[in-house]
Length: 465
Image 1 (tube, rainbow, N blue to C red):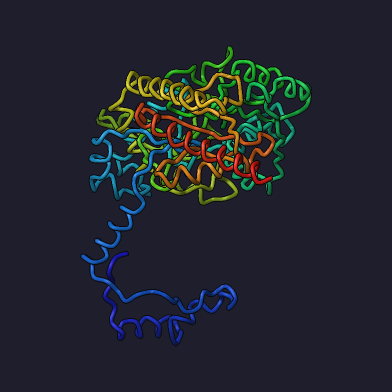
Image 2: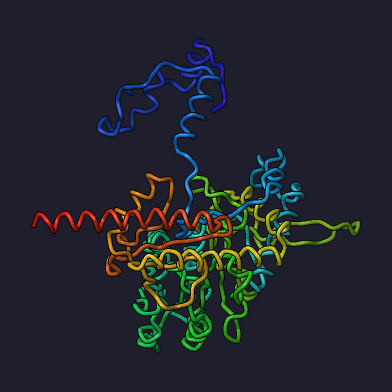
């Protein structure tokens, strides 16, 4: 927080102007029961050198654990040049341009970003500046309801294998607009969306079908069959994808014969660090015919009266999003810095670089699963093909294993019990290109110790029984 040296006299003058006796009166609308009262246990203020040392010591106590958690946020290597460039003042502090055409550098960068995203997704158009993957999916749902002229319903088919946090976010953002999310179960054998359950919905009116690729379990879906079902049933198809996976898998624009209609997801794998959960950014692409229903900023390239190249906001002005009744979106949060890093990241990596990273992630996952299942009591839960995450069945509650692993500086995965209790002792594990064989061997040894100690405890209990 910046240091603003207001004197007591200056504070008094400001209070007099607004007509209150003291600062506390500015907060009199807050109910007494919601106030925290006096803050206890706080030490005296520290000077800069002291507080810097304290925070460094606290950071060292946290350690640098090996991360095998995925679940929507991935520990990828980020080339040093990405943030070296993104941290320059002209990028780092840039905000949404209110006079957009005066910010040619910002507009050109967004144009380049949109060009890269459309190529990666094989779609016609892309926007910029959505908050994250979950809200991007919600915007895609709202967009589909507006755009599907063949449907009179406000119902969306939502696979149960979509990230549970994404489903919760979408439900929160669309429920008050009368939009219903109809859940489609997953096949308990493959982990893919159950096509037989989907077939039972044939002939009913739905605005759209959400198609995750890969899904929350890391399983690759039969995207061609799902996209074709949507087309035949006059529903729009919404692809929810990991952008890195699209470097090696068929992109949404090439699914089935005509491709998906809308594509969205989280851009975190493209240069954003985990950073305790953010900030990340959401992306949204679509076919050209749906462009007028797309929220967010869309940048176009043109020439001025002198024939010089220039960039401009197209189809809508930024201020449109303030006009609630006319807006395609009310998201005004600027994620320009994250989009900047993604643009730099994709430029440095190139198509071959992204594909190489994706392939390394997949190879590492296979190696991790091989090592963990070699312990004998652990097995993959689903038979479907995977990208860089997999669900394993453990012989004990995952939370017990994860607690012990965390004590040894290993983040062992994501416990699925809270969201998918029907799966039993299911653990979602992930391995990106940042993990090596030594990391995975350390994980295997520590997990083996957890299993061994469990067996010893069970034997002791049996003896006393």
